[in-house]
Length: 149
Ligand SMILES: [Cu+2]
Image (tube, rainbow, N blue to C red; front, side, top):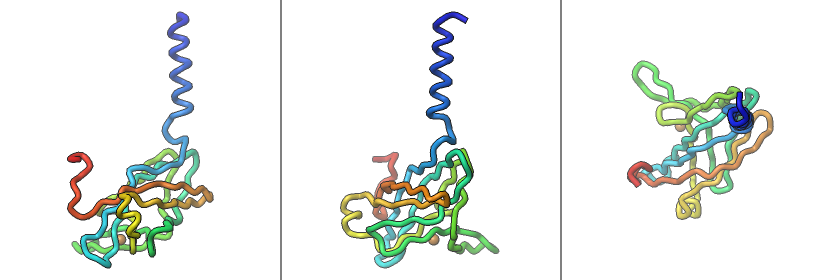
């Protein structure tokens, strides 16, 4: 191995150890789809990325909502209904998607300030006591999809 390839190999392993999947517990792609019907709850979606150890998301809070719950949409006999979840497991190194038709956040009373700002700041609380603050993009009903913007 010549000098350059040794350096490249060292750089590659550094990159893997510092940025490798599964090292850091975080969340991204958070959106809140405001309900088109005044008074109805809005829905929140995001991707939860697992860290080095298995944890669970045990709560989500925000200063600018009335109430927030973790839900899962389930289908029984062709009928969709929602169950309230106490926690959402986030296995080490895995990505868990909160998405339409699956696990999601149900959000009551998103504040006018967050609606105007277009961002809702929320805190994710994990079973290992980690707290992660994220900004979810607030979308009004009928807003174009991000790809079209
Ligand atoms: Cu729900």
